[in-house]
Image (cartoon, rainbow, N blue to C red):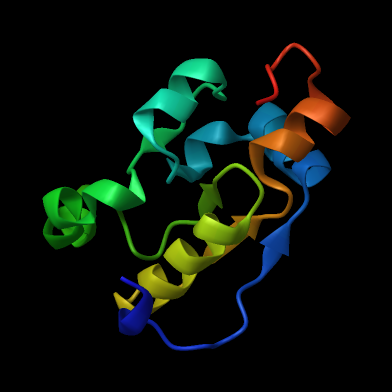
Length: 119
């Protein structure tokens, strides 16, 4: 996947902004979590679709048919690195409104919702 994206800057969203968006209008968002299934089993945020990067070959060809490339798409991982890669890749696939969740689920647990387990 890493050789399939350009290095255009991707907008970030803070975990505080994520919480506000989830409370205000979650139906207007596409929420993607690129962590591995075992990570999601430990800690997750309701409403996210899990697309593990290790399973890229299984879901990559269907991304444009399962998700709207013009709907705001927020991408989550553990700390924000893998999700940034996914945002770059989505941009190359024609997605026009992708944002990386800065700090990932770890920051969400620390700042927004301590009931989300940390690992």
